[in-house]
Image 1: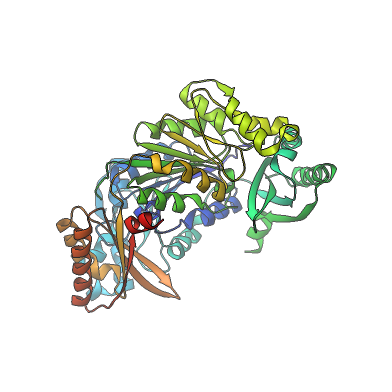
Image 2: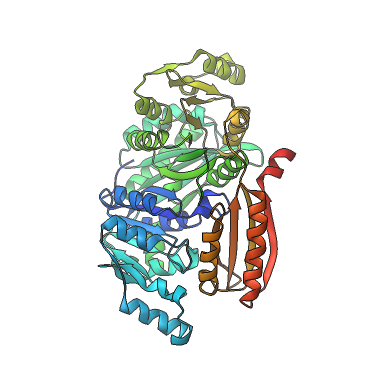
Length: 260
Length: 260
């Protein structure tokens, strides 16, 4: 794997994921979005609603990676403790942000702004608010840490509001080739190809489809010509081994981004 | 949240998850399975196919939790580097395990046992093999770290082969109550209920269903009577606030386990 210049990590805050009740939908969406902007997702940590564990995860990762994104725990209930945990991580006090209060007043109306809702205006000192076009209560950013809602639709709307401003690198391009070979048949040749194409990240992923073990070869790189050459070599390799290569699935995040 | 006596963490090894190509299916299944056996999943880390990051995650967590389970990276290809990473984490050498070689010979036949496949017999010294009923190549256990395949069906078959032998606590019982209130309407009362029921983990989860914001209240505990009492209080609370409580979804892992 070639390391990109821009890296990110995610902290998923949620007992509901760790209990098995809910499957995490935020990682795949964020991973693809970051790819589009040439930012490589390096690590994800799923932690419970415990302030010390949230603070530890954020502090472990904010010095290592360009960006840390957290999801979850910024609502009005007793288990929404992310703002306090982030304040703890940065050793700053919490305060009621006047702009956040205004956003909540605009959304709910002054009369409907109860104590529970006002909790959502409390953020760490020094935090910059992140717009929430869906449900009013803002996220916030402190240094390189972006604190987002856990509900996928709300989280996504928050990211769209700031992602264009992030510094990133070249978008990652990828091709996927399926074939009917076993992983162990192609392993040696694929390893040699990986040594040849040092800028391409070559992965092989066996999977069951209707009871039959199939194989996907995934190529990922920021270099379009390298991707094309390596893809052709993988197809030739599969055919030389007596296998049949399926259609090449192209996921060019560059195209996706420019057409968005 | 009341901490159980038995805890676990998962290390998901996989560039394909971090690239957004594949959604992690292993965490929800493992979380539920551990629940059944009274083991609380405390943390998940998704890391790339980089030996240092795998070793660091494993070493961070194996002293904190009773069990660490890793998934992925134990196949025959160049990107399957989990065995080496675990050996590095424990500072032990790798060796070819004669029983693992025998398992592979039995599965593939002696003639089909090529160099790539033989790689799957190489495990850290001191590791105990974990049976793979689906595709031959074993996982392994070293101290409290269980190294499993990444393909869900194979991973699950490995877990089933050893999970009855794990020491665990009382299974976690849970109820989910849906309602038509907003989180901010119920937040104060729910917080008070959480203070009253210290052995029950009370969570509230807003979600969009067909464009309408709904709310699920989830109660989790190992104490059946506490669960029943707290559930009745939540329903009364919803009704007092003018809301309507939907059907209570019971997920009694105790029942599931005994009927399995």
